[in-house]
Length: 134
Ligand code: IDP
Ligand code: MG
View (spheres, rainbow, N blue to C red):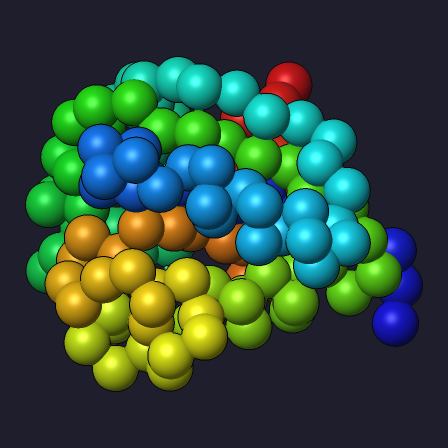
C-alpha cells in the first residue's frame, strides 16, 4: 500500500446531468484528498493522447468525439491506494453491468456514456496527471 494520486474525469454526461457535486462528494467522504480540480473542455489532441492506448479500438473515434463534446471536470485525488480505491468506487466500465453502490452502477445504464474516467495503474496516473495538470 502506498500514497498515490490518481486522475479522475467527470465526463461530459456527468457534467450535463448535474452529477459533479455528488460524484466529488463520494470521493471526499471516502477520505481522498482533492489536490487538483478544474472545469475545462478537452481539446481534441489532448483527448487523443489521453486515450492513445485505445487507438486501435473501434470505439476510439466516438470516444474522442464524446470526451471533447462539452466541458468536463478533472480531479487529482490523493490517498493511500487511491488508484484502486477510485476504480472500485467507479464500478465496471459498462453502466449496464456496473454494481449498485458504484458511481457507474448507481447513476447510469449506458456503456459508452459512463460518467467517469479514472487512471487504472500508477504508470497511467503519472502520465495522465502530467497531461491534465502540467
Ligand atoms: P475504463 O474507463 O473502465 O477504464 P476502458 O476499457 O479503458 O474502460 O475504456 C475507456 C472508455 O472507452 C470507457 O470508459 C468507455 O467510455 C469507452 N468504451 C470502452 N469500451 C467501449 C465499447 O465497447 N463501446 C463503446 N465505448 C466503450
Ligand atoms: Mg481505462
